[in-house]
Image (cartoon, rainbow, N blue to C red; front, side, top):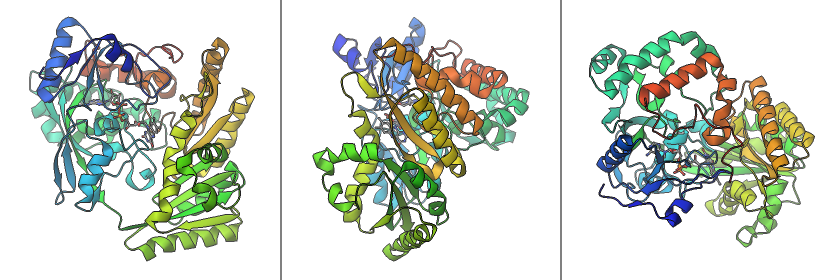
Length: 512
Ligand SMILES: Cc1cc2nc3c(=O)[nH]c(=O)nc-3n(C[C@H](O)[C@H](O)[C@H](O)COP(=O)(O)OP(=O)(O)OC[C@H]3O[C@@H](n4cnc5c(N)ncnc54)[C@H](O)[C@@H]3O)c2cc1C
């Protein structure tokens, strides 16, 4: 490799963690400079029977970037934006490009990478593809999987391939090659055919999903699209060395209605009205987070902006071709909320200056919660990104809260109401064995609750070490076995980020 390789204790210690509750010390950390470096690392590791694990910023919340492996950190050198093409509305990037950097480059052409995460100032496009990330704008733009055009990848034997949509008629042509890439085109269509019925019935009904392998996309897709199939595969199927992604027009203007409610349930009940006017985001934050933000100097301005002491806020964003059009959405919603008796006050933020302080608090929500730890008691991520149809969110949230109450747990509530995704992290002390048992019990109850509501156990953060264990239960035996076969087809020797998505350890192992 032309990039560095480190195996000193300091580097291994740093890379033993991500933003999750898990920790595993890696064998070494390599910093590839280009696709050939990635391929060389994969080949050498294959020769020595050593696993490899690709990593961007390591902001994953479920433990997917920790493992007993050689970590390939693409964020250090592989961070070039190779092209932004305004004509085709697309960008070609290396995997370590930070989302905000891509968006700054795209904005010069009036464009935007649609999916967003609250970690956009550090998280990478490779990591977004790895997790199938999505954010507040997903009601308008969908998930990362909807914006991937093609991927240059390194396969588990160190060979390189380009994954892109292939006409069904040309799949046989690709399958003829006597290579690992050829075998993907031979074996995956047969796998899909053999399990078509299970694929049709075994995936959760709700669209916003970041769990398991997306056989549903492969079964439904014509053309046959392996680029989108590997989105959300968490570094377990391929190493991405370059990505071509689609861009969307940057909205000309934005306006935000900030509804004030006395309770979380009141805010959630007002979501349906908000959705009738086609907003680009509907975001909730509760009093726990508001109170935490009040203690921080950087959010001090908030106190003078808000009306009273709300139990929850709903931020509803409207895009428009002009400031007047965006502001009209806010007015219509404020009027409807008033007519239906939702909330006690609606703040109108129509200028970027007014929106700045409010948006900072909203995107800092999870970070504020994480920083609220006292000693070893912290808000733990393991049930933090379930999603259900927003029409059922009120009932679902009440049942979710009852599960937490049943175990005597407190939690902050915030999330993307527009798409039924709530970020709920109970405060727990995982140094106490009894609380580890509680963690498992709660995870199982929530998993079953989500299933009852036809929702997704992970809707943007991925499976990692926290949720992979439940995939057999969620998808059923046949589909889970088909997913294990997917892993064997791509990675026969189980070298790429093993133990995630399928054949994982129990969620209570490897805790920090
Ligand atoms: C405070 C906070 C807020 C968050 N908010 C959101 C949110 O709003 N929406 C959301 O979706 N997520 C959110 N996340 C989760 C996380 O930030 C996203 O999943 C993000 O896209 C991960 O990017 P990363 O560069 O950190 O990836 P990493 O964590 O480094 O990696 C993510 C996955 O991608 C794989 N991967 C990385 N690079 C490659 C590659 N080159 N080839 C193949 N696989 C690769 C990794 O192996 C891993 O499985 C949040 C996290 C935190 C801590």
